Amino acid sequence: MPTAPTTRRVVGNGYPTTDPSHMSESELHRLLRNALIETLQAYYVDEPLVHVTGDLMLFYEEGNRLRHLAPDLFVAFGVGKHLRDNYLMWEETPPRLVIELTSPSTRDDDLGPKFLLYQDVLRVKEYILFDPRGDLLTPPMQGWRLTRGVYRPIRSLAGRLPSRELGLHLERDGNRAYFWDPDTRRRLLSPTEQIELALDEAEDAREREETENARLRRLLDQAGIHPEGD
Image 1 (cartoon, rainbow, N blue to C red):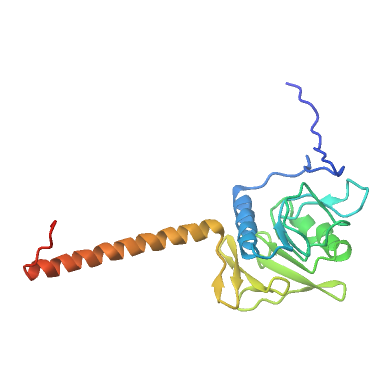
Image 2: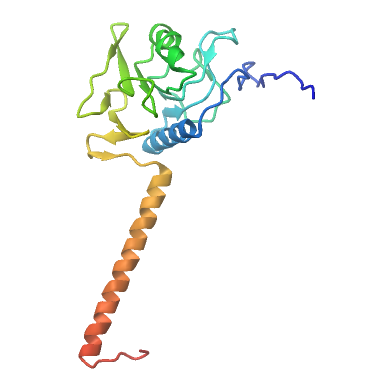
């Protein structure tokens, strides 16, 4: 059955919100990207001028709709948190940190043209690559920091990549990546993980209460004391 040609959806500012050439991603990449974004959004929830987003079309040459890319995750400082249809570099501040999740279809671009674009054009302060499956990059997590206009490798610290821009470290655990806070010496949890932890703690507290109540009833029975209603 013939189909109509795919077209980009254009909004009020005249720049597209979608890219029909954008390749599909694995469920692992999507889940990991969303978890990292949501974790940082929760971390900066009280910072009105820190915007965390990802998979959003970013245009970097005014008037040219072809000059764009969509980082898996990026963090910009000095801009509001309002929802955007796209990100126009000449109206916003450049991202300070970008994370790309490498896949077989993006590896060469991540290490080649995109690397140079982040370094030379967008001037992103820190660029981090993570290969969830661990078979494309050695090591699977790598990072670079802009130093005198050139990307220099970020040295790992206790197996983690420290980000000066965020004041956090990025840590690999199997095919997942987490943010680690050097001040609290704990991982940051995503909102979903925070809810799961709260539920687990509530269940643990309920079980402890039931165990304690059972112990007290046994002591009362042994003493021949039977409270009213028992």
